[in-house]
Length: 212
Image (cartoon, rainbow, N blue to C red; front, side, top):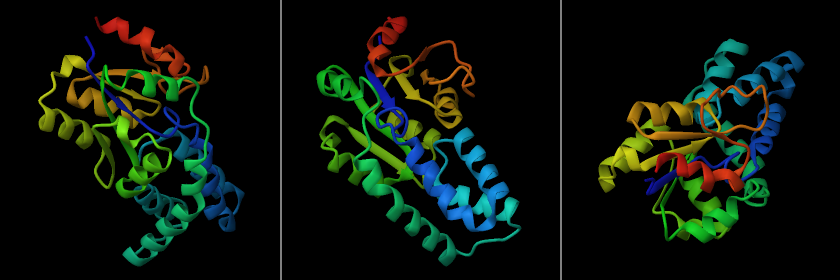
């Protein structure tokens, strides 16, 4: 029986993936359409990876430039300015708020995000859902580190924990730590080819019954 649910945020709780995609597109637009297309393709295929790691990679691979710490900090700051308010105001994934608000006494909830930890905590606070979660984790720690920390801190049985995510980093965090995984899949061409999938969170309660 599942007692603990770890949620990714963008694309699982909030319908905010396109907010981040647009920000990456705008930041790299001065370098041309080809670079933008490569950046967007990688970003969409690698949700949950921190923006700092993405900036390092995109500049090095697509622009042949290495960023110093100040440049990384400037890019991260610019990115935050572009996305935070939009993520706070993004609509919920269908069924997400209903599930969170009606079942937080039944399950232990956590958030595991690639967003900087202070930022994702503020977003949850501004959306007035932070009180539903026992813990909210973000970068610079990775998602597999989040799950490891949750298991260690609270002593949960791995068989009673499920990660609900929409990206390879979510799936891998669950697999590395031996927990269950449910994939939110929105298109037939999804990069997540998982046995257990949901199209939105209206299906989550029924999917959890697979683990009884």
